[in-house]
Image (cartoon, rainbow, N blue to C red; front, side):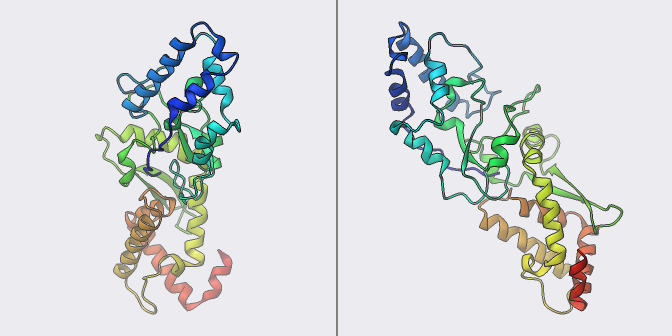
Length: 296
């Protein structure tokens, strides 16, 4: 989960290319339809892609062929769609902007193209994501109650702050804990329902909990690989806590977001003293007997 730069794409030129080709161009109301789509593009940006914002486009069925033609053009290899293809192959992202797991390489529609066909090749509605996000949350982009929506990586500045952390609970101890995801914001924060909706609609379906569980096992196998500032030899529990905070801060920096899955784990560990004490003692035991890692 991270805020990323808004793409610079001439959407009006792409729209004109689609509208100027037969049989779409022969529709008697093509000029009106084209203006309608332009207006919806502008309204989408003005609303920052928030389906609850005033003036945000709501689903419509347009007459003629333009809406379906825009929908059918997604995935086309037409030369004028190269800017859209460039979004898909964005090589600057090492973390998915939607879920905080490694990778991107696909494009996801924030407002689903099955409902908003006219936004199917609108760059502001297309976010480079990992394949898990692209396939798992499907057409769900908003809930029934105000604030229940997924975050928009182009518009939501809140993605620059820490929104999600792991909750680590014993099961019955911390050897194989129960790990869940919780919102970092207070319950009265206006974005609290947005964070919870994004957790349930995007993060959990994408498999973030599975990766956190695997990461916990990796922390037990090779703790010093991730906790690189932990002193060698004897160390205190405060030393361990400091190493956890440093690891969290390093991952915030490396992934350019505090909402990457490793930072979620370290923030959860920082706020769960019992889990931190358990893992600190495990590291001491592992230092004394490295063969213990074979049982993890």
